[in-house]
Image (tube, rainbow, N blue to C red; front, side, top):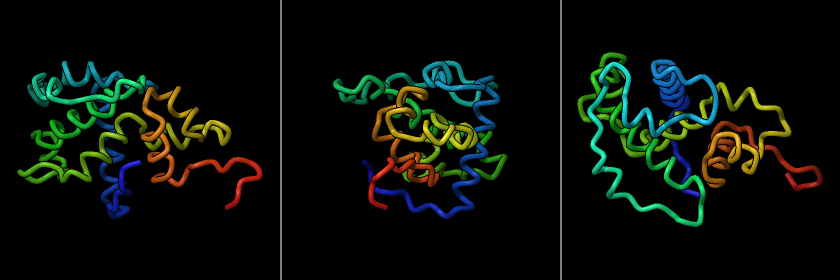
Length: 157
């Protein structure tokens, strides 16, 4: 798992809200998020996609959903550099920090509201992986950062 992101709670809340707004702008109402379509066809001309950015990325071939977090980070970076982000006070002219981009990307793929709505027995990395089409590691990190990680019965706390 990547190192934990230490963003203040207020900043996380802003990024979570922005993720939901961006998904609503793209008419995405349930998982899995069609992040590839959002990258290629951003609503309201928020950015001009540069698919060369995507071609420069490498993906772990053993993970079925490995490309999706990378694509989400590109979307987060593009959105963070957009007029939309600046108008809402989400980002300065320099865009989002790398930690903010990573958090925002996970918030796009696994929105907080959708994650909270999961039944307790669905709050495991394996279950989130299948529902949201994300790598298990990303699912675990999102569950942990939202304090939703289900502890298996009989596991030490």
